[in-house]
Picture 1: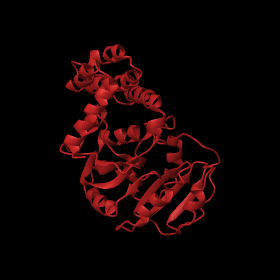
Picture 2: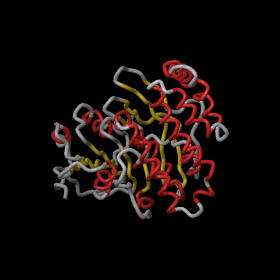
Picture 3: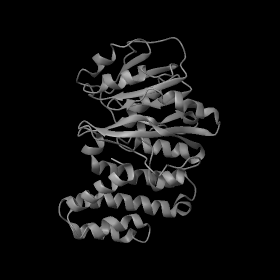
Length: 318
């Protein structure tokens, strides 16, 4: 069981901002401040401390009653920790902000009005991907993400930046399961895909959040876990959606190809270029996007990385 909130408010907010924290003292103050700096004021923060051992909780408890602080007795999977936070949420809409990311001031003000469309279950936006070295770029450049019923597109290539997502609470409550508590990496993709299966997804075409990349990110430290959880997620969808394998045959192949591509990158970094081609070859007829790494695999991974940097510069102007 969690402790009772240190701060609480009796009013019912429109938006509950879920912040999950595990040893984030370096960035957490900046993240919280970005919520307090919102031009849209009708919100609460549900701050779930996943049994941190640093000063994260102390920093969070310095704020007023709009931040409701909870602490778990032990560290659990991120999926389970997010669910524990959601159980405390009182808002009609749920937004997510991890403690190393930042919102821009007009984020909620620009997104909440899109829920006037009653079919909209999730709203996201462009974001700025940045690191502590001062490097940054927009996630979406010339090619914009799709809107509407986009489950098929999300399954093909997942494109929702977590710190920009806002969901309708009633849609969340209609699901049989919230976050899958087996997951530490793909818990957001799994949930948001299930929301997108029956609900419209809408988009604000401007950066409304800053998504931080650093060496402590789960993505940087547990790459193999990403691949494992993606396989589990696909198997799960086979059980809950009728004719899933038949209806989304090409999308599943692309997803499997992406999984093999990530395995191939790990092999490539070790100099196993022939194994890279072996992994990618079955998917060359599925999509042309696998041809580029396949051809470059005759060279070193360093050459391929230089190509990707050049491509990013051309596409995003960074």
